[in-house]
Image 1 (cartoon, helix red, strand yellow):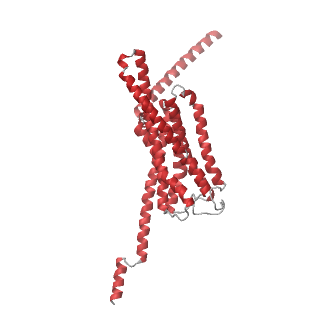
Image 2 (image 1 turned 45 degrees about the vertical axis):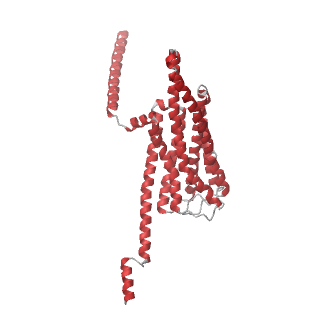
Length: 373
C-alpha cells in the first residue's frame, strides 16, 4: 500500500513520469526555437535595411560616388543577397528542422550561400588594394583605379565566387555521396568532402585574410609615417609661404579623410574575420574528423554568427563615416517641407511655361493672320 501511494504521489508531482519530462524538454526546445527565430528575423530586417540604405546613399548623394564607395556598394549587394536568398530559408529550416523546398533549390540555396560569402571576402581584398594604392600612390591613384577597372574587378569577384560555388555544388563535386535532384530530401546541410573543404575555404577565407592583414599593416605604417610628416609641416607653417601653406593644408585634409577611411575599412575587415573564423574552422575540421559531433544548435549559432556580419557593416558606416552618417540621416528623414517647396516651385514653373507658351501661340497666330491678309 505504501509503495502504491508513493508511486501515485510521484506521478501527480511529475517525478517518475517519463512523458512529463519529455514534454518539458519539448517546451524548452520550442521556446529556444521561437526566441532564436525572433532574433534571426531581426537580423534579417537589420541586414536588409542597413545595406539598402548604403546602396541608396551612394546612388543618391554625389559626394559618396567614389571608387571605394562603388566597391562598398557591391559589398552591400552581396549582403542583401545573403538576407534575401540565404537567411530566410535557413530560418525556416532551423524552426522546422527539415528542408521543405525541394532538392534542386537546396543545391541552389547552398550555392548562393557559398557565393555570397566568397564575394564578400574578395570585395574586401579589392578594397584593401584600393586603399593601398590611394595611400602609396596618391598622384597615380586615378590612373591606377578608375571606374572601368573597378567594374572589371567587381565583375571578376562575382564571377570567381559563382564559379567556386555553383559549378562544383550543382555538379555534385562537393560531396562524396551521390547527388540526386529527383529524390525528395528533408536534410539540406553542406556536408562537403575533404578536397572541396580545403579548396573552397582557402579561396573564401584562409588565403584572402592574411593578404588583407598584410596590406592593412603596410597601410598602417605608411599612414603613421605620413601623419608624423604632416604634423611636422604643420608646426612649420608659420615660416612657410602662403602657397606652401595651402598645399600643406590640402595634404592634411586628404590624409585625415584617408585615415578615417582606413579605420572604417579596417574595422569592417576585423569584424568579418571575427564573425566568420568560427564557421571556417568548423567547416574545415568536420570533413577530417567524422567522429566529431557538434549539436545542431551549435552549428546553427556559428553559421548565424557569420551571417550577422552582413548586418554589422552598415552600422560601422554609420558610426565611423561622417558622410555616410549624414546621408543615412537625410535618407531616413522625411523632409516634407522641402518636397512641398519643390512641388510648389515646379507647379509655378509649369504655370509660367504654360503662360509663355500661350503668349507665343497668340503672337504666332497674329503674325499668321497678318500675313494672310
